[in-house]
View 1 (cartoon, rainbow, N blue to C red):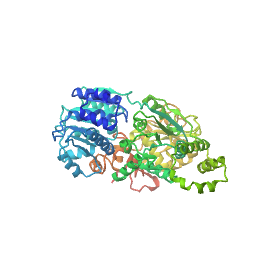
View 2 (view 1 turned 180 degrees about the vertical axis):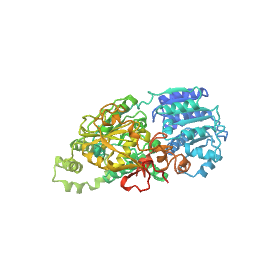
View 3 (view 1 turned 60 degrees about the vertical axis):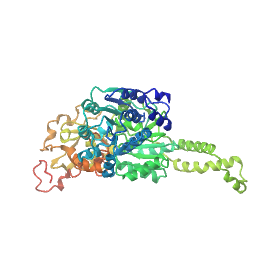
View 4 (view 1 turned 90 degrees about the horizontal axis):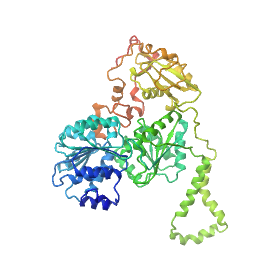
Length: 631
């Protein structure tokens, strides 16, 4: 306790710390708390998830506010309702010896009138998600004109989810002379920009390095063919019998699908994503905390509120679109001084991302093989042996021992051991005895794909609002291919290139033989270039001299472009207030502001819905090659 005393905390907080069993402050707490207690200042603190950031800003805020006043003095903004509730509960626990303290959580998916009623009772501290907070300020249900302290927690995630405008609007209703404390795991450009706009000469503290991974987490990757991804996941689970893990997928659809497959195969699993109601989420998280669920399959946004002890593994079933998100994922494990493992299942086309992440987190990944079936049988056998060894004897069985001995008296000790262990071993042996090797050969993995591949030229590009990711998704949807069947996607201003294995050549060429995208002919030709050059370099093949000709056909760029089409699909700015009432944090479940949202990735790929048609389906009055106006 003396170590916390040295930070300058008062008796009420020290008593609460004792009750919670905290003994030693974390690095971010040692660095931040004395500064925030000593003076009113702005601060930017960079520290990984799970390093005690809530206490780092919660202790000073509690000590500096006037609990005797009913005026709102502190505002804490967080990206999701789960994290909002988590912070609220922690602040209440820290301040339980402050008589009259009222901490209120404000978030979507709950009664706005009940929340307003709790505010009117006098809330010294409000913890809120940006969407619901902005809504309540607009309705004049909350007054933050006299706040003295504002915390932006998980600032990088709030900006990734598109909350920049909401945060700007909220802070415009607060005093200019307040102290703003920004806490973030990573420091992308957007976080730097918000610090410059809303803060005055902030003190900067960094735990570890900028964007670095947690010290106690080791990183592994497993290279498999895309079609074997789920089988690899099962083997990793079977090879770690005591696994207690979070499995990350990019989309809500994939999250639900993987969880259902695991449950069908007999694993203790559940899904956590934005389509679940708040009550369903609460039930899933309660079961996970109680370890009734061994594997929680989650999207990145839904997992932002997960603060569960002793998670042994994080499994990246798919890598995130934004590599900074990997830091948040891996931070779910290796908390509070414990060690953890972050596993990544990658296909050849994704392997290059591993090197990018290594540079960001300043840690090396270890390339490992997916365990063979027989190796898993051995692991499970010794796991059972240790489980039997550590099992406490229940003496209620004593009364039944005579009859049990009578049944088993003909067997020797060695035979009994074989029979007991065969119960478990046989199950795994029968399943894995004919299992194949799931490990993909490395080969040329710098850009993905196989040696036996075809490179194509297509006459759409950046001016048609495509980048490599949206073009890849568009082609995947149109051709009904798997994501990893398309690779080396290279988008230029007015044309692009992509590769598939040779076996898909006939499908690609036949599909684009007579294809239009809203009135414009889209043509695909085979390129002479192999695509092995640097991404973004000039193509040396057939399309290299077609830069000026790629835009023929009057394909005019519509105001707002493709991003407007995606927004009209549910979750754009016009619908934010309505979405926030359903639940903050779900409206942009998969990308930076302005980027591709999960909603358009989930289901029918609706960002492209209705945009394409075969020429044979086109009505006679459709025009002369220009882009048709949509009704």
